[in-house]
Image (tube, rainbow, N blue to C red; front, side):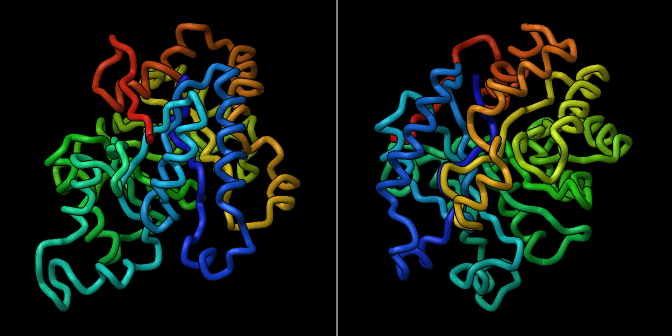
Length: 314
């Protein structure tokens, strides 16, 4: 089984380096490895860690986790820039104060071709965030950079979308203007859309649909399961990617608050609770294999006929 949208650590490294008593990374590494080992015992063989710049991607910490677990960890490159680009690239790029080719392009391409920050892990996906209802200059620039790297490397694109104010079609339209085919795009969190008509329209695009927040509280689990079964019934089985969007450590709120709010938000929730629920709704073994093995493999490799070649982040 592959969990196609997860995280290990979502944090602000600068903040924590200046206030080191808030979290001990070595403890976090041990905990993450233990959680992944539990997931392995339940059949999870691979997770895709979609933490990118702006979310605290730390390849050295992830490499330490990788040394302690049998679970394959696949990494991504990209940028999570909901409130503007960081200063280091904001003023350098097309139409900026220093009008030049976008430095983001070469940085992301290097993550894919050469490896991330001296580790053996090469990024296998591109990711950006889109929570707008209309495209602003930052989003347009990020999309252009992502699309350029996609055209050079062929790796798939994952878009963090907003299911509350659905904008998945906006993201697809922006990418299409740069030549990105919907079949190479994952619309993360679209599985939380509660407007059935809009969700069906999104699925009709041919993009992958991220039903990837199981265990989070914003949408009832029954709604998520209903969305999956509805889309399967309408012929979209091969587009669905199921996951949790979980992080072993996330500094957005205290751990005790997280546990109280979202006790099922963990890497083992799908095998323990969601898969049995899907079986009760009529999904068979072949369909579950498609969801958890064939679809992620096709996304990452373009084929379903061989064992998945995950890049271990060691």
